[in-house]
Image (cartoon, rainbow, N blue to C red; front, side, top):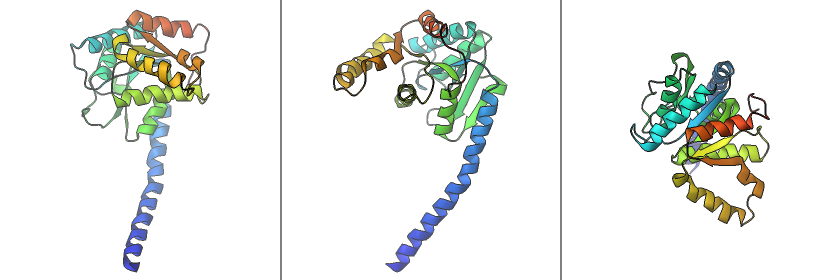
Length: 230
């Protein structure tokens, strides 16, 4: 029993040592991200499924959304992978705009997409560092249909704005058919149960076209300053 306890203690101490050294790698990712992203200028992040293929209606819509947003003067940030991320970078590329990829090695995303500017491709090992870059340097979130990762980005951004941890910025859901059920559940269940306030519903806009996305973002910045969110 004593020997087993000593083995467990040794293993735990090794974990603590590795965790301490990991701090340097984490700091390095933050420093590199802050330095590169702060030099890029106003951007809009586009999120959505990595599994959406070229030719799919939402892939092509994401290309058009990114193109219109880039033509309106914003850079485009994506997670750097395939699917909707690729579509976002492709749209920016077609418009001659800034195309940023915040890459991370994930299942179904084995390589960066080819539409990221060569000097604006960043690689991350830590999800939480990557998410800080999205939140700090995006002047808006455009959320296309996606899975758990997309919902993670969506709800974290809403939570940070709701709790005044970051400045408010536009969050635009694209695709009524996909998002309507979620929004109805939020309104008819979460709101009815008193778990959110009526004003929280105003943090999200639902649209179906690229033109509407640009309109929401431009209308917001008629009364707000373009700057990092914290």
